[in-house]
Length: 180
Ligand SMILES: [Zn+2]
Ligand SMILES: [Zn+2]
Image (cartoon, helix red, strand yellow):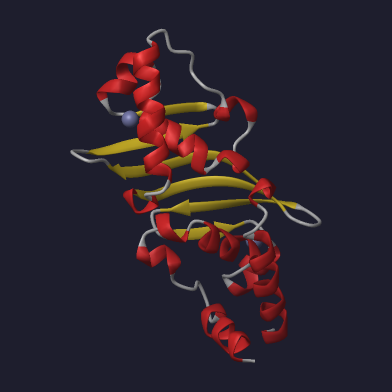
């Protein structure tokens, strides 16, 4: 079992560099803005944010930042820009979202549904609060798999601390494998 997990860890490292294997179907997150905290969600192709700008324009700097950060893992409809009539609004939103892309600590993911195209099969991975689940056999047996470990690496800056904890003895094994 240990050699099996070490193999999974190597795979997780590889997967973490291949965000195009993922399709995010649902996502919910908190965004610590400069003045307020906002709630942002993606439900299939539909974004929402509770800020005023979003209510007025159906997009905002927060949503644009998410579209940039997760671009490789979104389908075309979720990546698409909302057409804006006021050029000046658009310019300021784009400007802000560019900064946010480099300030990922503002984001805390607390719910995600992801389709993961593995080497052989497709798996559904969920994060609910700080609780991971994956539909693959390895997760059922070990409470850890290459898929959840890859997401922990990929999104480390945006996950609650508890969601970064190893879900089994995988963390210790990872340490061991680094020492060899
Ligand atoms: Zn917003
Ligand atoms: Zn899995």
